[in-house]
Amino acid sequence: MKNPLVLIFAFALLTTAILATGGTQLSSVQIGKASYYGREFEGRKTASGEIFRNSDFSCAHKKYPFGTILKVINQNNLLSTIVKVNDRGPFVKSRIIDLSETAARTIGIYQRGLATVKVEPLNIIKMTKNLDSTFNCNDVLDCLGNPAKLSGYSISLWRTKNLIHLLYIANELYLNEELENVYVVGFGTNENRTYHIVISNIPNKSETLKQIDLYERKGYMIVKTLSSFK
Image 1 (spheres, rainbow, N blue to C red):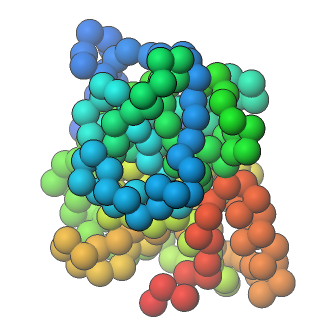
Image 2 (cartoon, helix red, strand yellow; image 1 turned 90 degrees about the vertical axis):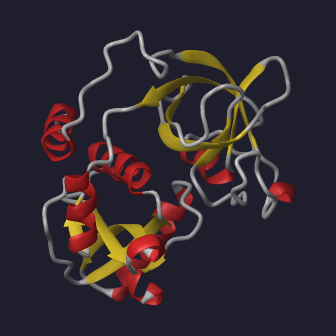
């Protein structure tokens, strides 16, 4: 059984982050109805100015600042996803959050319409010079920030330029899946650097195809072999 306190402690050392204890702007928890974006919104500009992609872990919220990272838990099955606020809405009184398609898929509400969810902000991991340097100076690390090496076949589950968001999702995956490790792989430099969540040590092509199918069924929409991004 993996202990989430170990992950929190590791990142506290790496980022000198502290746990929120309430009374801050990001301390409230909401419970209410979640909906998700239709595919007709693909490619449109969000209220933050970002382009909406259904394959990204993003959401619309009425109040949280753009860039806030939220954990969304389906109260029916306790599946969770971690999304970044980049839009405003939903503008229906009974709903508290609109999710991208991939986020909706990962918590089992896609094609089901609405679901009751708990929404809580995350502010454990902070960007510091130490964290930035660690993940910029090493192209392959495990999800705790330790330099690592890939072996066998590797697949990318999701990619983004937002390191903090990716680390939350990578650690959530590590805690909830039966995986020996989850890797963070960086391509590019400076503002062009993109980070991938990677599963590695897959023994052969046949098993790689099975893993791609598995994670697509879990809700990840752009799962490819890591070599296809090089």
